[in-house]
Length: 212
Image 1 (cartoon, rainbow, N blue to C red):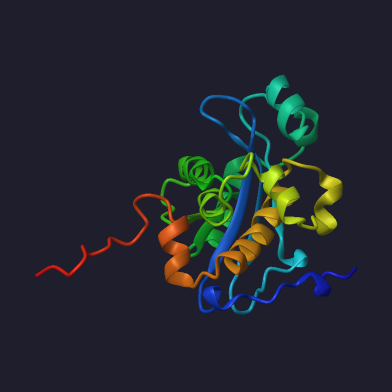
Image 2 (tube, one colour; image 1 turned 30 degrees about the vertical axis):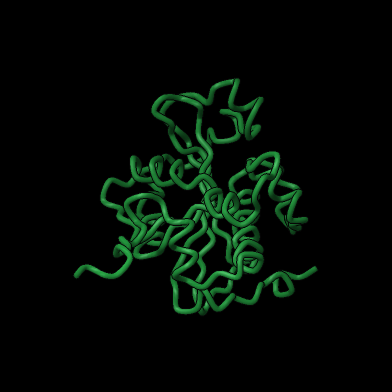
């Protein structure tokens, strides 16, 4: 299957919006240091095709813990030993994120971790597919990304080989999940923001009857 056939049609709710779907993987330290980041830009020109995915592997200052390697992403110190350090890629990543609405699954994690690595970064909005899924699909047994991917029957496309909890795989699945949730929830942009925006980014509603 070619990348072109995997380009989804943007739903009306996203027309005119500039988003970036992101996932980060860390080294298991406290505070976490990024070892992998994937970003998929979404706008009227970039409809979210597989070929639009950008990924960076990063050599962290501290070692990757054995636990996070074993239980989460499988990335070892040897896998990133020859990769650039964060300061070498930070400018490129910041340029891609700049001015775009951030979308992720359990987005508070990505927002917090990326913000710690890019102190000047201020996304105009942060949307969370975890919050959205809990609103659209009530009473599921779990809302982890793997469970939602299975529930929705999402095709991981060319990212299946990288495996679960690798940044590109999780980013692609979060994007496909958003498309499905917008469709199932019959959401326009206002409804999407109301449900999925993190606190501090959601619009303030007027009380019933207006202000006067």
